[in-house]
Amino acid sequence: MLEPMTDVTQPEGYIRYARSVALTRLALVACFVVLLALYTPWPIALLGAVEFGLYLALLVATEIATRRADRVAASRRLRWQSEILMVLLVANACLIAVQIRLYDEPIMQVEAALLAICVLLFAALRVHMSRISYVVGVAPAAATLLWIAIDPAEPLAGDHYALAMLLFVAAVLVVTWRQQATDRALARAVQNLMRQNLALTQAMDDAKAASRAKTRLLAVASHEIRTPLNAVLGLAHALGREPLTPAQEDLARGVVEGGEQLTRLLDGILDFAHLDAGEARLNLAPVDLRHLTRSVVNVWSRHALAMGVQLTFEDADPDLDLGIVADAARLEQTLVNLVSNALKATAAGGRVGLRLSAVAQDTALGLIVEVRDAGPSIPPDEQLRVFEAFETTERGRVAGDSGLGLAACAANLALMGGEIGITDPPDPPGAVFWFAFRAPRHTPGPVDPADDLRVANPIRVLAAEDNAANRHVLAALLNDAAVDLVFAEDGAQALAAWGSGGFDLILMDANMPVMDGVEALRHIRREEADGVRVPVWMLTANVADDDVARYHEAGADGVLRKPIDIGALFALLAGVSGA
Image 1 (tube, rainbow, N blue to C red):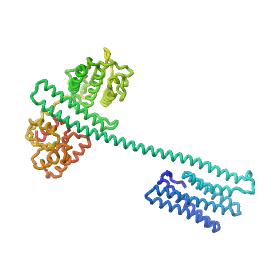
Image 2 (cartoon, rainbow, N blue to C red):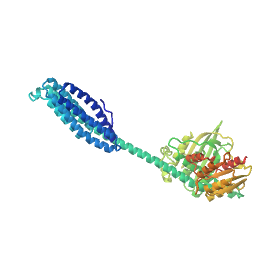
Image 3 (spheres, rainbow, N blue to C red):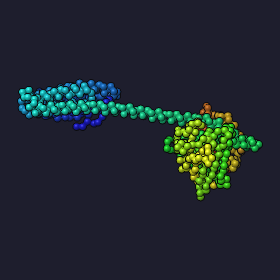
Image 4 (cartoon, rainbow, N blue to C red):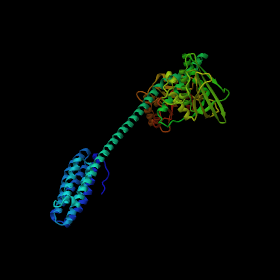
């Protein structure tokens, strides 16, 4: 009968194996005892009953081991019990074979040999247990078989029966000993594989923990960056509404454009951190590529001026509307990386030119952006490696390039279905980096919703915000609107203010002392009267997907992210006021 395949080097596997051996052998020995009782004298039948009792004791020992909670201790105890029982089993079986052989009938020699062969084979199956167990089981059975086969009265050379038995014993010993070496090598391989699997599992757990820690770090960094950025952008927007000189208007506009670029860059970093490899996606929305390109040039012109480099912009098709549907963040990241790369490569007194051209294609536009610098030329063999991650050319090493910026550009263009490359300018030195892509046209131009939306009817708004700068921003933005703005500096104050009633809208920050915004929101939803539901929108810098899901689960009607989207804020206020 075949034994179930188990790893006997492990405590659980050894216990299962020992139990299966005891069960199968017990059934065979029971049949053997019946035959002895029918055809042999009672002393031999009694020895058969002893054999049955020993296997029964082995079965009992395995049953006790299976019920012990400590598998290691149970396996250790069962091992030495089975070793002792095996010595007794083999000795008793060999004694039975000897007793059968002592009969004078020739057929009894064959039957005794068959019994000794069975004992030898059963003992040889323990080759994988241990060398001691193997020797203890095999040696008595092999000696008994040879004693049965060899007739001292006949020369060994002429005794074919004895020679056959000797050859059989030698074959069993050689094969099983080699099997013992193979089993041990396999057991070591299995153990090594298990250790490697454990190490791999641990490495995967560590990698997941590191990824979670990175995400948490980026989430915290996002919140800490967005809070002051909200103040910068909000106050700059508010400043833009004041009477200013043209120079002051230009400075305020530069602050807004730079802040908005920083916001999109921050969004891109967080989006990358939450995406697994191969799962990148485009966030498509209407965008004016001309306006976006001019904004990048305006922001970087001041940096270029400080470096002594002239940054220019050429609009090859000024009369063509460049409103498209595309991923503004990826386009801006590509533009910024190419401009930054060109400025680093160009020495003081040089010139960097950005050229934008387009070709109308029915409902789409074919767009080409070129950034020409005055740095060292890039050899053709190095041009192939420029857009590979962590690959830098000689020019890049001199400029201190990390090799990641241009790789990000290539990844963005691949995602957009476009192309990116390098050409040599007509009058070297220098290089022209270009990218081209096709995008659907968006006919309406970009409109600032804050210029069109108005708060039609006076409304009362409760704003829970613990940061003084952010409270100042809200007050400045809503100063001229028909909004009665009431502030609370933590969730507990917001809950108390809400209890007084009379609010048309609640803007709730998430992270606040005493009581956070989510807990305050849950209190409001639990305690508000049936049919009386005040709209609550989270106004927060924590805008990861799991955070947004948590807000909605707590009862939020929506989420406004920081830095504040002025258009989205006024659209909300207009909707609440009934505009």
